[in-house]
Picture 1 (tube, rainbow, N blue to C red):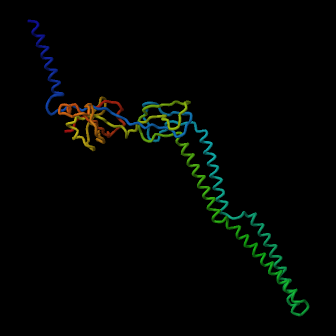
Picture 2 (cartoon, helix red, strand yellow):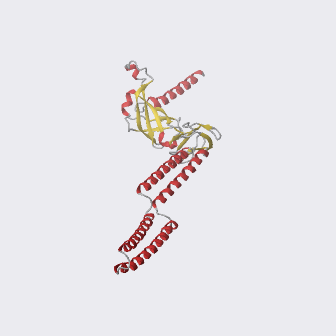
Length: 323
């Protein structure tokens, strides 16, 4: 008689467990959740220049803001090239300024002195011409003497005009072609400086967006080759929710569909927007898709979550099926 209650108890317990499973997974109108996980597409950040790693500012798993420094390579050679390029720009700008302006005041003063001497000679020739002209008219001097004095006056006047023209030319600056050539050299020097500064900036990149550091491949003192990743960053906007949908339901998940999902320890009400549906099924050999094999056919669906910063890549999720 004592064994009967035990059997009854076991039956009741098994019935209760069966009813619980039926209520959770088998009752009509309550479709099973779709399994999936959180995936992060990493950016592998490197430098176009080789060099020894001088500083690493992040560690694995750390969250960083956009613009946060990540690492810095040894920039000694590049800094020297930058200084050389800056000096080249300064020299080119000086040549442009020198070509654009005229002679210095001390150089113009030489022309002023020459002009004063020429004007004095001109005044002397004028006086000599004024003295000889009436004497030639009276027959005291031959006409040839007047011609000689007049020639001396004309030469003195021409010399004054030539000196004044040279002085005026000295205030104008270089010829247009010379100025353009100097400006072209200055532009070339600025291009060299910009290239050097770009290479210098690449030696110490910053985070292009807020995200999570997935891995750090080098530590201070180690040598990193050109274009070899030093830090892997998963930006928040590259976090995705991936889950698998049975073949019979895949038509309900076109791109742009909003789905709801949950994960352990996450806040309630999470959702994502489908941005990719795989064109290839999985788990079924692509030989013949019979009616029986279609039940095992699933498609990968990817969705962009509203708040990727709160999710951890690799975390399993449950997606509420779309009805």
